[in-house]
Amino acid sequence: MKNSSHNGLREPIDLLLTPFQRFARLEAGGGILLLVAALAAMFWANSSWSDTYFKIWQTPLGVGLGDWSLTKPLSLWINDGLMAVFFFVVGLEIKREMLVGEFADPRNALLPIAAAIGGMAVPALFYLLLNPSGEAAAGWGVPMATDIAFALAVVALLGKRVPQQLKVVLTAVAIVDDIGAIMVIALFYTAAIDWTMLLVGLGMLAVMFGMNRAGLRHPLPYVLVGALVWFGLLKSGVHATVAGVLTAFAIPARPRLDCVAFTNSARAQLERFSAARPGDCTRELTREQQHALGDLQSIIHDAHQPLLELEHALHPWVSFLILPIFALANAGVPLGGDVSGALLHPVSLGIVLGLVAGKPLGVLAASWIVLVLGLARPPEGVGLAHLAGAGCLAGIGFTMSIFVAGLAFADGSTLEGVSKFGVLSASAISGLIGWSWLRFVASRRK
Image 1 (tube, helix red, strand yellow):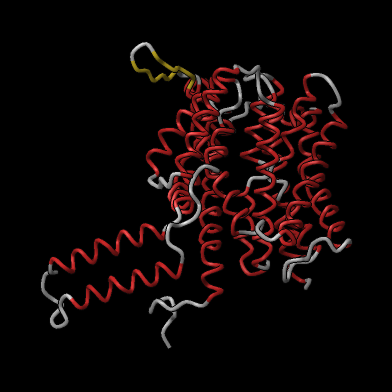
Image 2 (cartoon, rainbow, N blue to C red; image 1 turned 180 degrees about the horizontal axis):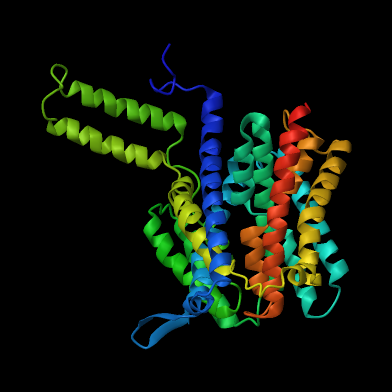
């Protein structure tokens, strides 16, 4: 019996799960590369070549046209520029989930939303218990985040020992976490605002939404106007990565042709193609057949969703290039031989306590409340033991936590260094605990 994927016939469940499985595999591969980049950064920053590590990221890099120019250190081009692309993809994921994904059905959405809120609030509270005031208190947003790439990489190592629906829940929790982190960045880690440049950025954003309403679907105009949104928000004082999320919501999400119209139109062109030469089809195409293929290509283009096309096109670049570069530039923490001192610093200890203990406690408590009250229904095959394991994996803060740490503390300060060390330590501990729990405890429970 032939495999259905070989002859073009697919079951409905395949159509539902295949995009998510492809996405999960991609994120797992990116997580491994992230780990390699982080280890390389730590080795480089604590080796005899450490001076070159810190110098290279402070190298000025500028772009200009006439009297206009923009010059920043290489590290800021990565954190403000490349990471804006990362947040743009996050925005695309959020919009997709709201339209057709886990968040489209309120009863499905409530569980991951509650779990994520609990997983953000409790870690922040734990951190503030150890750092209630002073400069250190600014780091309360660091242990709130979840790194989806690392979390799914750990889940991928477990294979079929965990239910597929747990991966869906974990992804949804991470996406809500990202929304929370973006709100925290926008509201609490924004400098003084230049209202003129903010209005310029928002005006360009309005232009993007107008392009969407007018039916413009080619990605190039959105890229050009989106760059102006990014520049306006960057110069306004609002963190430029917020522009990535906002511009994502202006990307068209629906195809011009629905399923029925596409099927009828495509069938008509195929019949036209066949009728143009009913006999031998091995020779060169006739002019009529070429016209039929051209019209069929236009029909296929109208059936595509620009949002999904952009998301799929950018995911490999984000997972395998942008995030590893970010890790290489930001994960290098000079320890100076005092590892225990760095780990026991109140900032580092607050982050470890928040991510390792606060995340699973917050996720599990919030999930239990909405399930007991009957406000949400548990996914098939997923119990509280699985949700506890997901909470542990949500403690892998890595990318987002390091990013927030760079915003919370002055560049190059002692608190920035110990906060990043706390993030790396907590992420490693959370990943190990989450893997062990799901491998040896949750996998034995129905």
